[in-house]
Picture 1 (tube, one colour):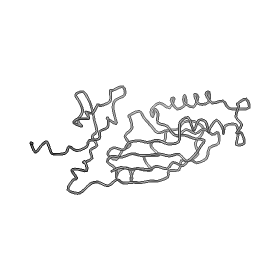
Picture 2 (picture 1 turned 180 degrees about the vertical axis):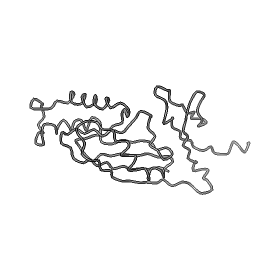
Picture 3 (picture 1 turned 60 degrees about the vertical axis):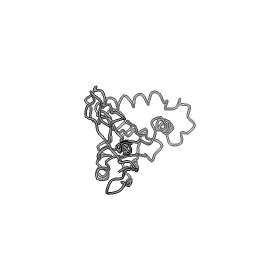
Picture 4 (picture 1 turned 45 degrees about the horizontal axis):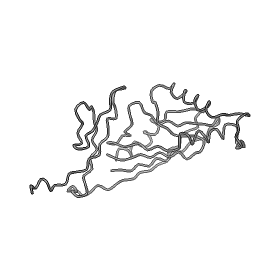
Length: 203
């Protein structure tokens, strides 16, 4: 048998371009070769050597980092917080070539989501939608009203969007789409500071 047939192939993990032009088709990565097929643009490769063929320096051990980011009280509505998050974890993030970032909001009357980062009208329209779909006030059917008429609606909205996000890390950056941003959605009329636990894992 030819010696080349015995050599193990390295595992290749690939992700699409993180900065396409608006409206441009995402880059497509070939699972067979790890290289973009014809027509793909700006692809990013994230390679990890297979365990059967370790490098001279030995296998890379997974790393972890964690910190809690405290956001000041925000008015009711949807707020773009990507710059704040990135600024808080910038030093830790730079140590990761390939991994995942997990964001966990420690509250039940606010939420996290990923959405438009360019036009603030999207944030305003999303708040309008939430206010219309979840009734509030004396005519609302809620039993949990001891903390105010906006409290139970806030709990429902929190469950609709959720309290956690997972974002890939590529070459020391959060690998989001060009027009994606991290939102904190504040669902109370009189908010308090919000805490987000951010955990980074990878190599």
